[in-house]
Image 1: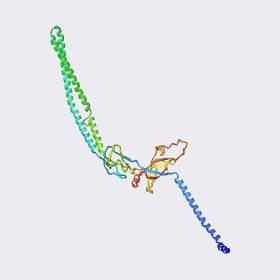
Image 2 (image 1 turned 180 degrees about the horizontal axis):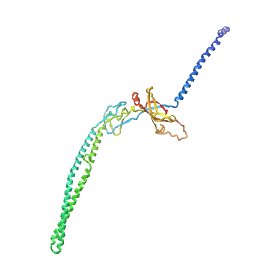
Image 3 (image 1 turned 120 degrees about the vertical axis):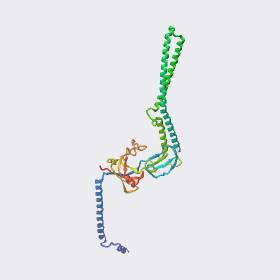
Image 4 (image 1 turned 60 degrees about the vertical axis):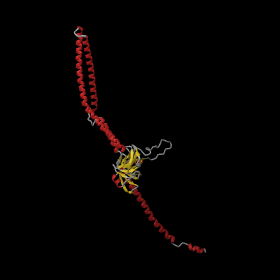
Length: 370
């Protein structure tokens, strides 16, 4: 039995000697090919590093942003109609919301009535000027007449006063002359007071119209400004889009009472979008404003390329601008490489062909060659 087993397991003469050279002959070329691939890859990487190394900086910590416009109510009223919805694309000047204009129309009518009244009142100032001038002239004439009567009465009194001593004039005659003189003096004082009043009235009226016409009179101008303000409030009952973009954060409901300065919605100008790329501080040594940037969006993949330029660098890192900035002046401190936002402007034509939305992820590569 043992002999049979030994005979079955005995190696075939010459078998091992033949297989060993075959295995060695197959492994030799495989190692040579593998080594050649490694060498070629190393040379290619070295050549790329030598040619392109240090000429670009890139990051995938980049996101689309845009300066949105807040649409606010500029007059208090009730929402009458609102035919817009979230994500709707609008153009600058499109009607977004219409407010109830009843109160605004009444206010405009009242302001126009006040303007008409002011024009009529100011018109009387110009008409009264001629009348007041005539009255002032008449008062001056009365003063002259009263002055002449007083001078005559004074002369008559003085003459009789001289003659009364020699008995040429009686005491009663002298007394009558004195009475006439007193009356003339009183009349002169009255005439002067009336003349002064007439001059003062004309001066007051002249001050209201001096140097300007009816349309430029301060009262008329003030009333006209109130009309313009009322008209502006009426126009503001129709709320239009200040810029072109996409409606976002819409809170308007029909029947809602809105207040002045209340934010109703936002408009995001997607055609003016830009990218904030957060590069590490160690990557910014050669970054300059105006350098070209090649970008790709995760939404479109690497097949769609966006071309931009460095528009500016932020004034501080994200951590320093946080509401609660990091306090590094502590005993337990670990240095962390910071990132600085770099603003990148995009080509409007490319944005129109491949629209982006705020918050989308991007990859940015800046060419830092001078």
